[in-house]
Length: 236
Image (tube, rainbow, N blue to C red):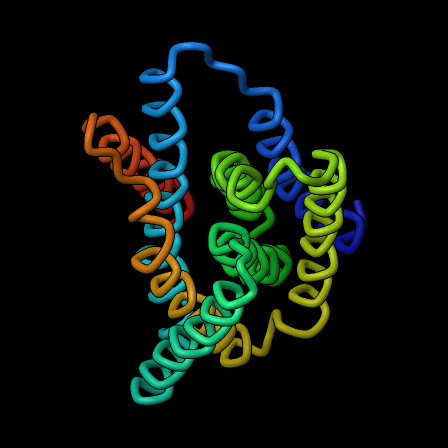
């Protein structure tokens, strides 16, 4: 199979879990209010744990490896600062979307890394695509509930998620064509995204995942990180 077709297929399949997670959130109808609260908070925490693993195990170590230490720190801080401004603007407009932003900050650089990896190690690229799919599923679920207010048809949001998933193949092609040898550029993108994700995790995602009535969400966060750890150990 041509590398370009392979990159499009892998990244596209990995990204489809975003609208799939949104669809599952739309279909969710748990009658028991206590159980429903636990499940929704646990899913949000699972997504947060998966995002934490992406920052700690993939984006920062892989990105910083290709950069001078000072530049890596500055880019990480800049990512947090830029997404502080973006989050502030969203809040002033009365909107949400922190989970959606964090999901994209995770998906876009990982899709680029997926494309770049196809040049050197196609087998590992398969595993990375699977891990992106598994991470995006709970993130898509939580992001859908975060952005859908019920005022507009749910399929509008799901269609938007499909469009966002289409960014994956584009980013994978960019990684394959331009970034396979440009390690510093890809590293800069990954570290910048990591700073943005960490800000959003502590500002918006973790507080929303917390439930005073149950410790299940905290266990969900551990499970989400364990998923990312498993994927990291399989790909190293």
